[in-house]
Length: 371
Image (tube, helix red, strand yellow):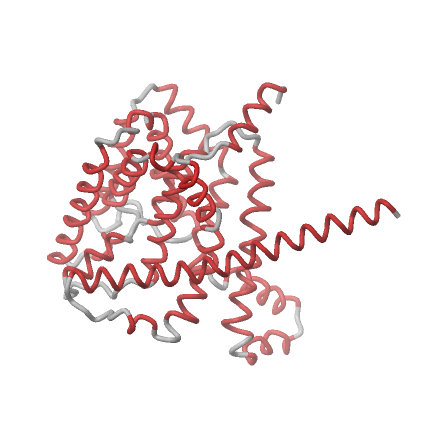
């Protein structure tokens, strides 16, 4: 990279988009909402289904966001280094933390069974289980890692799209039509799951839709779109809820649906319609502080859900069994805010500890150099 490219690369990293920061927070709220969601069945009442649909696409939002930045001109080695420092290390620590509290802390006999064998295989099995203990919850991180590692192939596909000069609208409609067919056939076409290559396959269309939306985003920085985006978002989820209610196709509440693609699009329109408002120094500062915590909150929130929210039956305080729209909506809002707030406090403590540790490390290295 020459000096000009380095400067562009540095500016690209420093500059932050207030709308994207808000969408990170919305995505985080949605992910938490799915983990305290209601048990959705054909006989579920409509308010529960509708509120479940409102929170269904948190993962899809993050794939869209990834599409905004994945194809930036960043060296592959830099990507891998960032991936290791910012994703892999926190992920490993989070898995060890979950493993300790959910297995070792509460069930010591299970740990002993691995050590009693005293073989390399048993130790490797224990280490593997530690790394993948919360795989059902942290699958997003593993798919994210896979996407970054396989970035050259995705970049090649993106270059082919650009060479063919297919318009952004056509690409969006192509992926939307594929997902509509997949929805009709109950995921028999793409067979997307929340892990590995099946999760990777589901993420790709959302990433490319995000990338295409980025190219045209300046068109949507318009206050007039604000009310339209909200109405379309609610209307899309209303239709989704009605279909689930009367057909029993609960698979439609997953993020990898045509409704998920459209919901993300409407939420991005909403976020960019208030871009000028979010770009206010004070508001942008507050949003940035919160959005900086979203990855840690994602790692921690299931601990809060399982060991605080569910263990102490916080849901009963918020009246989970209320069947009215208002009651169900209040339950969802209060529950999500509760889990988010507790997770945010834990994340803040981790950030402070990390800052103290690095400050101490700097002071220690200075003393060593002086001596």
